[in-house]
Amino acid sequence: MATGGLLLRGGRVMDPAQGIDGPSDVLVRDGRIAAVGPALAADGADVLDVSGTLVLPGLIDGHVHCFHGMGQGLPPDHVGVSRGVTTVVDAGSSGHAAFPLFRDGAMAQAKTRVLAYLHLSTLGSIVGPQFANLGDPRLIDPDGIAATLQANGDRLLGIKMHAIRSCVGSLGMEPLRRGRALADELGTRLMVHVGETWSDEPTLPIGEIVELLRPGDIVTHMYTGQRGGLLDANGRLYPVVREARDRGVRFDLGHGSSNLNFEVAQRLLDQQFPPDTVSTDGSHRNLSWLVYDLPTVMSKLLAVGVPLEELVAMATVRAAELIGRADELGSLAVGRVADVSVLRLEEQPWTAMDSQRQQLTAQQRLVPVLTVRAGEVIYPRPPDGP
Image (cartoon, rainbow, N blue to C red; front, side, top):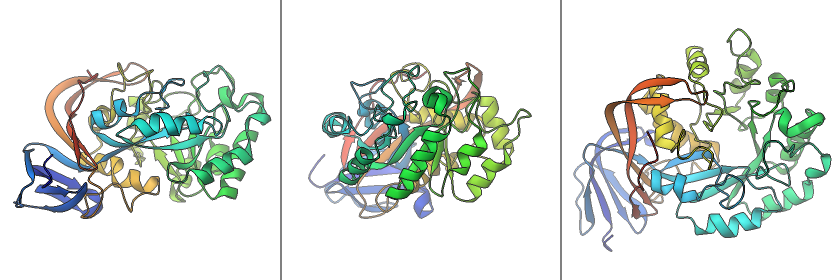
């Protein structure tokens, strides 16, 4: 890029945080947004013609696994800037003991901005699902968690825990109550996994789980088709779940290998229960065959009837609000860091698949064209998608 900056010319700029949706240009100088408006003068900036594309604030994927080299962790840039996403949030891959390795390794080496939730378990989620990583009280170290959160406030957003039997074992709700108490003590948020993928034991009661949560806490895998989800036996949303949203608990998609079901999604959308945020739960288990990237997951929600404008908000301003970074991320406001996602909305049929292999013929697909991360232009790697 020339020293004069970069001008993205002629795209459809969609910035829900500012109420902008229409043809416009975006000017970048010194790694920051310098101007947004029609027919901007280049004044020495490199000009990229992005006509026919969507120009969005840098997309935020609020649930990935990118502790590369440990467990199922991806290199952050594989699910980040190389596929149209400028910020990723690792959802508890690391516990406090391994976090310095995560920070100094995968995080430091990535062009993508990498934030994270620290797992309640010292082991994190790098062990396999057959291991109950919250099944022994000694696996929760409050002092270690507190010290790590305090020392890494620029990277860490809160605490992640799995509210499933295969994780808590015979201890049931006890580890989750300890996580709640610790989050209260430290003044931080919780992200909670629901959906029992790996155990045949009775599920933890969803009502007891959501009653633990406070405004700003997050339930991820809201459209899971696994046992222990948000629907009762009659396909109705549990009233206690709606009450949780009404008091400020937030609900994230978290597609993953096991936790997006088209039928569940449609039932909950029909009951006016859309996601607050959209995320991939991307990992080595699903990058190359089911989930692929955030634009593909967004395209699946398009196919079940979520409007494009809502999807953009879910992946930008709402995602930024959810992680407490709305003052710096999720918008193209002048002066902000120049994180921009340029996508093309292609009108062509393709076959979308959910985690239970249900297929749906979709008519539109979002495809990355380029990413601008702090002013640097990055073109997408070849897609793994369908």
